[in-house]
Length: 193
Image 1 (spheres, helix red, strand yellow):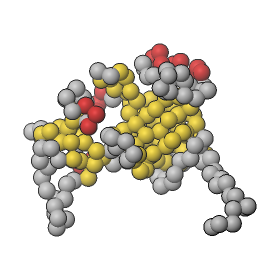
Image 2 (cartoon, helix red, strand yellow):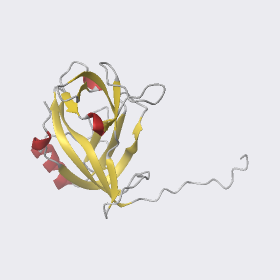
Image 3 (spheres, helix red, strand yellow):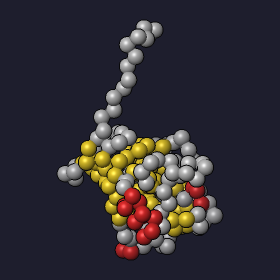
């Protein structure tokens, strides 16, 4: 079972790619908050050797990027299986319905289920609980609500977990050092619109 007192957090600074931090990526199931981080070779080797994280690869098994890259994600919603004696929900993550990764979440950390009139309902088995987005802050610690674009300089706070599929980095928070400005390409010759 998950014990908060024994959690070790790690930090990785690098360039962000395909970030879904304040809004989860709903294109795939399970719905997740995620970011891919490109880093240097020394840091990449350290993460692979010390923490057992795998670098991002394409379908052929080759590196997806020239630099070492790692994906960090956090499931955006959980299916409640039952409640413990303190009223906390014991949930199964959607990608592991078999119960390999059971964890406990305090209901105050998640959005409580509401009925049609807006009243809070007690959680029932098989209901879905939405988890809050990872913390997104600037260098001074102020909360941000921005889109982190590809190439932005960030530091990711993560913790590792191991399942039957391997070792993964769970996204906890992101500190933005600089946002890479997105420049939309405008076709001045296109007069149709």
